Amino acid sequence: MKYYLEAHFNLSGYIPEESKDELQKIFNEFVTKTNETRLEGNFEIQKWESKENKLFLKIDSEDSLSPHVAILRLRKQLSNQFGKKYRLGVRGFNFDKYTIENKIEDFPTSEFTLPLTKKLDFKEQNGKKWVKIEIDPEIEEDFIEKGAIERIVRRVGEKISKQLYGSKKEHHEIVWYSGKKELHTDENPTQLMQKANWIQRTNYRNQWILSPTLTTLAEALKQIMVDQIYKPLGFDQMMIPKLVDWSVWMRSEHAEGIYQGGFEPYFVVQPKEPTPEYFEEIADYITITKTIPSEKLAEKVTAPIGGLSYAQCPPFWVWLQGKTLAKESLPIKIYDWSGPTYRYESGSAYGFERVDELHRIETLFIGSPEQTKKIGGEVREKLRLIFDEVLDLEVREARVMPWWLQQSHKEEEMDAEEELVVGTIDFEAYMPYRGKREDSEWLEMQNVSVIGHKYPKGFSVKAEENIELWSGCCGGSFERFLTAFIAQKGIDQSKWPESFLKYIDKLPEPIKFH
Ligand code: SER
Ligand code: ZN
Image 1 (cartoon, rainbow, N blue to C red):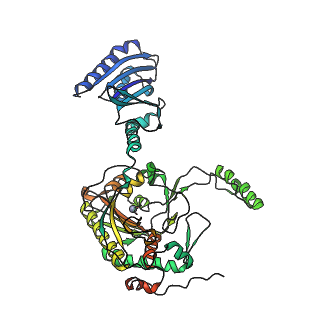
Image 2: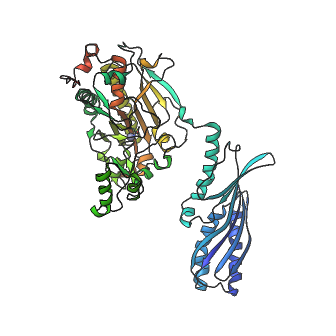
Image 3: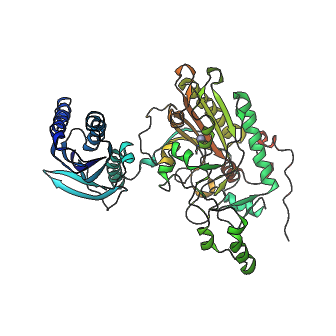
């Protein structure tokens, strides 16, 4: 990597003539030390000069210390060594020009821009391809301190490789299959349920009303999960918040994946002033015109403060954030179905298998790596039993791109091992109405994930005696379970498996409409 930086320090007063030798000494030592501690590359302060209260520097570096890091170190040295002696405070620094040249694997297929970046140029030199990144000189000091420049350089590479190879999200490897099952229909399950008045679309996109009949079925499924998973494995129920502020999605890294292909949240805004006076004109307008003045209303609310729960577990972590867990409390085993979660499904209207407001059940566990792996395996086994035996569904398990990498839009490689170690297993159901088993799309109903240290780390959770903490979680939605079930078994209860019917006292009669 080749760097060139022009920058200046701002001092609290004029830099005296007699201090120049001292400055020269500081810079010489800095350069010598930098070059001595590195086997390769070259670092050079090409030129420096002081003008009034400003100290200008030109730094060249090739495969050596990056000049912005040099500036951060020099700032410290200058205030300690030099500033004290001459009673000058170092107020800070500004960049005048900063370019970074880095090798790239190939040129991008289409142009792109990046924040805090003034210009990106691509060139070929000596048979190698290079990008020249010009950093915006207005970049704030604290962004530089927090690693923004390193992330700009990395982001350039990531964007190019994504353009060249697309995302790796297609990963899908079938690791288990229930075998063929008795199928009682090949009709579209959404239509079957609609015709039976079990579900009804609302006026709002991909939102449904679940009738008493369908709710009874959802309740039965919950009961099955309690009996088969949560009671025997010792999970407790809790209620996780469903409104998620940015601080949570920053720590879970969802924020960085926003609308990038795996995380499509509903946003939440607040009133700028929550008073009758502030909203009086809106109320008057609605009363008189019977319409909503959307634009006027948009002016009276803030930018999003976060959104509606998307992946269910991230807001759980605020509970443990910054705490040290007692050894005796481990492992923690939780499940939550206390409210819907929301996903903005782009495109047209979908069936019941793809809803914007979904009723998910989340299974969450935290413990040592051994505990976490063990629980992940146990939950997977129990889920397999529920789908395969209790519901008698034709299902398979597939190793897929982990949900947290998908949602945060990271592209890390996952563990290649067959066994569930760190990674996600999806349960998928065959949907006869979509076509043949071999080439139709199966429905993803549920995942089981062992996540590793990501969440404890992201939310700064520790454990007594420095036990390494891992977590895992599993999510499934009743909409998906029921769609899969109806798609294979139809709506005629006489054909349903006894092991499921056992959980249904009496299915309420649907309301009839004339
Ligand atoms: N939180 C995980 C997900 O979003 C499991 O529910 O899929
Ligand atoms: Zn989760």
